[in-house]
Image 1 (tube, rainbow, N blue to C red):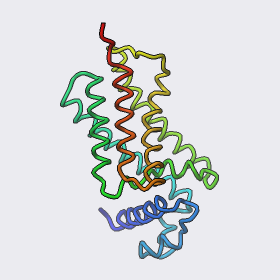
Image 2 (image 1 turned 90 degrees about the vertical axis):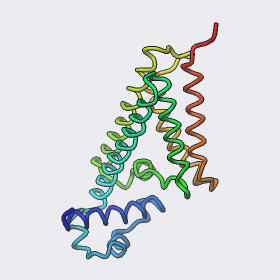
Image 3 (image 1 turned 45 degrees about the vertical axis):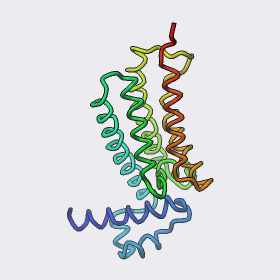
Image 4 (image 1 turned 60 degrees about the horizontal axis):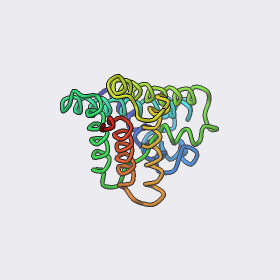
Length: 205
């Protein structure tokens, strides 16, 4: 990695830790500069303002999440060709991954930016929208494969069901932080797994 890329990555690492701990509003450029051990000019060379930094953090977060989901679902497909079973396995693997984090999941940059969207310009809000819609498409694709074989036992909107995956994860993070229970997110994800299992498992005649 070139020196400039290393500096940019260091700025983003420092900023991400601070933002996840206390939000974008309470994170100043001055503290990022000090923690990253760079000059203000060095910061502005890479990011003209906090909007540019926020957009970069969102895009990097989505890239990391995409790699994680790709890996989890690929591992699940290796364990089962059945779309319902592989999805249930993937969700369990995700819950186990989060449960293995000793201090709990650090949080989501996308959610943090949504909570404070008044701070940002249209580019940042659009990046957030793209992120959420991307997760919808990912989970909807898995659900479509399930529905092709297992009709749902209750009437559901499939886009809403796909959004529920993100909603449960983000909601679990909020619950986890609010009550100080690092494993709360994993428990919520396992409840989602139970719901999907009940929704799509055929009734016995």
